[in-house]
Length: 362
Image (cartoon, rainbow, N blue to C red):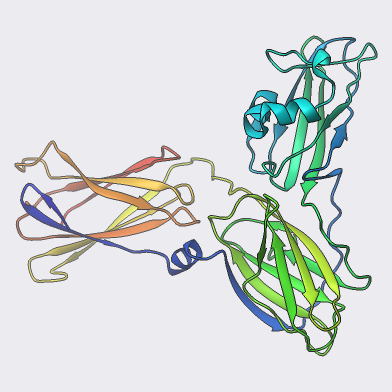
């Protein structure tokens, strides 16, 4: 309860049940025996955490400085200065090729050969999340830009048993998805009626047990539906399914993608007024917002009617948080001490900057 100049204001927050559950758990899982499956999608230009990998761009001018940036799975872009800050100068100096004579020590630019080529070798630490990357080489003299896509995978991933298929996919069959969306894990080729232990390798290379152990059908198949929570690290997750009796192994990768915020096209703010609710003389006001960004804070403010003693002041109603669809709802109760007239509610998205207002009369 908040008091505005001695007046009582009751705020009731509506929270999505699904969002509340997801915030407290890594996955939500449900399962059944059966289901099919297919081969996992191939991983392009794969590198492994803790193992050197090489990138070989060409087409630059002779002996020119070349800037290098990496686009990470979460969409962030980092140059070599950022890599030094992330992995440490000692690690970088021991694993990066060309050697220091071919690197600008101040800006950490690479330097091409007389033939306009580069041979860049680096050992990614577990600070490099597993997932899809793009390396961008930019020649500072020639203006030549070379993009190389590659993926970083976890170390020590077992080889799948021939004939065993494991697939993790979204609702339309893609091996990737977003936090909050339902994903499906399907396996076949295992023994009949046996328990499957599932290990998950997270983007940082650490491992955890999947919270549910399915049992296969008579055909040796199983299906599990689950949801990644919003707190999960963006990147590639490796799922390893091992049958307890036959010791068959299935391996699949699923890329958790960063949520894509909608283009700010405005918002929709509605106010519903119910007189004599919850008690005679009081008014319940429900504020509904949509078309904000997903999972962002929204600041709400209440402005009293013109001519009222408190007019000219804007009272905060406290921050609200949108769900994954960019929606929120909150209710306030105004008692008889509030003046009659037109009120204004103002909502501002903390991340998107989207602002909208709506007028109402109790």
